[in-house]
Length: 115
Length: 114
Image 1 (cartoon, each protein chain N blue to C red):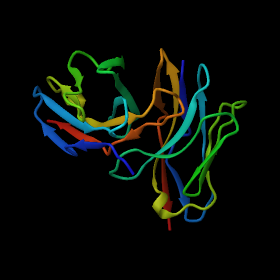
Image 2: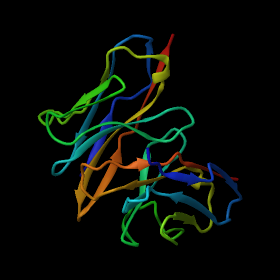
Image 3: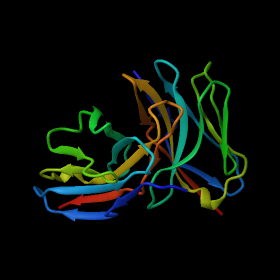
Image 4: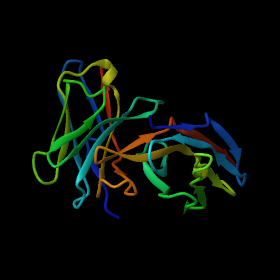
């Protein structure tokens, strides 16, 4: 079964540092997403990406966040200057199509801890 | 707007008990509906889905039926096992501006005891 791969599984960083979370979506998928889940809370949408540009972003996705597809396989989320409240589980997802009956496949997540 | 409401947890059951986790939604247009499961320490796995009214999604003994008239998609299982202990998320996908978007409910934690 094809899967979405995320690395690292856990990252600890100091407040103010930059972090890059990496994802390898399923190879024939065209739509990519980042979500986050603060411990014990709801899974929240951050951003969607299609055709090498952001298609939608949430209020959480401010100027500190950016996404990139640097090559044909990776999809990254960068947080420029981390804050304590950025500590969360970050999930990458991909989808084959923009149609509503195509579900998303999620990776196992990266747990980010900002200290 | 679009939203998903789930019953609050935790839900605590004994092994072999019947499970129902309620989920209702609000949506403009005609969404697809999903249940995802998150086992302890793991990511989000698709459990089942339904894409039109009266469709029943099923997997691993779990079932949910897309009820347009009551805007519901309740998750059921006839006999739960300890290994079903996890957090269950109801979700919907709607299309806006040519792109689809998935939104989750708050999640319901299920604990099954032997």
